[in-house]
Length: 276
Image (cartoon, rainbow, N blue to C red; front, side, top):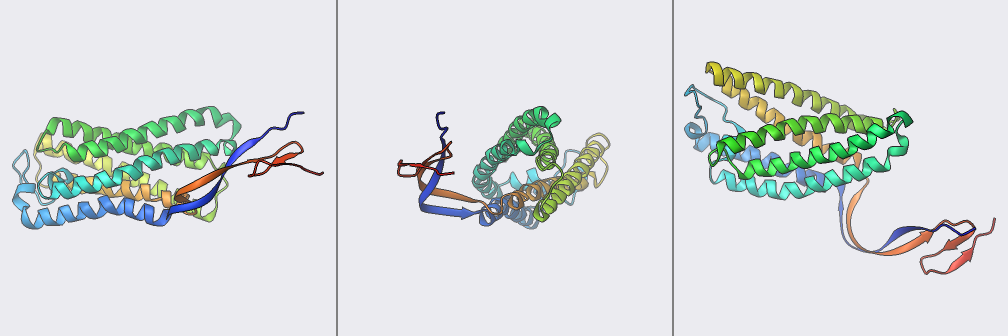
């Protein structure tokens, strides 16, 4: 019988290693802190400008689009979103490959739909991340109709991704969770419920503002918008719990072959007979 050789890689030299904690912390801190800075500075120094409404009713809480659409706040926001986006796209691919590797833990009758859902989940997250970048660079002041439509797509894909990803996280464990995974799963569910409630509130208050020009409705709309934004960030931060023992490496690698029906191929490509 011919020996079947499986290839794997061995790290020989490491030039850069980033553990998951600083990676996750910086990735989430970029939009979280920049949005807070934009809000505080706009509220203190451009209050009247950022609180203008289409109905000309009094407003106290400016929207995310308002505080990130004026300068110089827009420059800070765009820069931080640009830096934030690359890790977000990387995590999309990491989650996809991770769920693919967990398929054997999924109950057999769910494996077909599981394969479909992990692909769907990846593309929904890809669209969400793309819309986040676009909505930051196409402001409501520059092109409101386009900005509005991109924001709607972002909002819908964000909720759909959180739902699908939470389901996949559960299925890929088949009911068996470590303590850390239990915490991650709880926060995923909590953030999904939070963003769902906030999205419903946002639509309700938008209706009151646009159709009936109710005083204070746009302020509540803006509050819901911030809840959606920070809930989205918190949900993505749970990736730290999922991959806390992993690191990003830039390293030299050498191939190593292993297994073998009686034959072992070492890293030096020297065959040795395996005794039973």
